[in-house]
Image 1 (cartoon, rainbow, N blue to C red):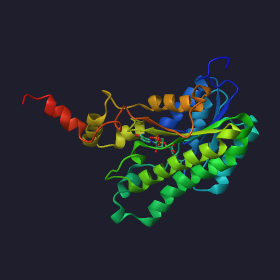
Image 2: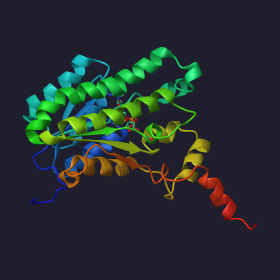
Image 3: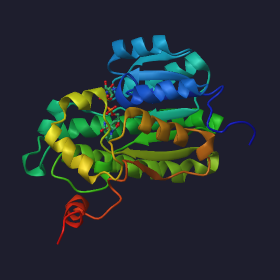
Length: 269
Ligand SMILES: NC(=O)c1ccc[n+]([C@@H]2O[C@H](COP(=O)([O-])OP(=O)(O)OC[C@H]3O[C@@H](n4cnc5c(N)ncnc54)[C@H](O)[C@@H]3O)[C@@H](O)[C@H]2O)c1
């Protein structure tokens, strides 16, 4: 392959939820590497502000709960740019109120469960379905953002984590069905990542718990996840499909209770 496989020259990427946090960092990085991006978000104002800062970028109003809006996102992108090379499904139903309400199954609100699956799983599926014909034409690929919470049991966010696990399986199904036609599909699982929103909303005591279980000496930034997303979306990852790339500073890689063991062995016994 000629040239730098990590670059996106001549390529077009859609980034859902691209108006802030990890998605915005990814939009900036793909643009810096020569690509043009469609920033699709329910927060259209913020998407427009970011698009105005990035050469060649397009802002699209998207509500993943709406089939029409999600299909229109793909159509508008192809109409505007004439092609589609990368679909990055990064948006998710998030926020302090949602997280607060999404706890133990015994107290699960059915409407919250349904909404979580509508935005995260059904929305991702509809976007993939609408994008596949265009991705076949460019031998493009899909990157679906999931979460480390999709891989392990937890006492928080049962609906969110179940929806993210479903997206992993969706990613494998797409990879299996469309690989021979040249389309790759992978899932990217960030651990806790210090977006501006999370920095503000996450209780410091719980943040310390996550830091203690992280193998790095700091939590990831949006730019760390953007690097992983851009890698998977690029030709540098051409031999990677149907996979889950965990980008969490090693938090999900070790035995349970590691931080307790670390403390024990750091003391005299
Ligand atoms: N930040 C973390 O610690 C972390 C950890 C694991 C996984 N993730 C995942 O990373 C992705 C990005 O998260 P983030 O932390 O940057 O959050 P964020 O809130 O900054 O970004 C999510 C974006 O999705 C958009 N969105 C929400 N509902 C939508 C809808 N119905 N239609 C269209 N857009 C919608 C929001 O407006 C927002 O811009 C998410 O999939 C999230 O689950 C984040």
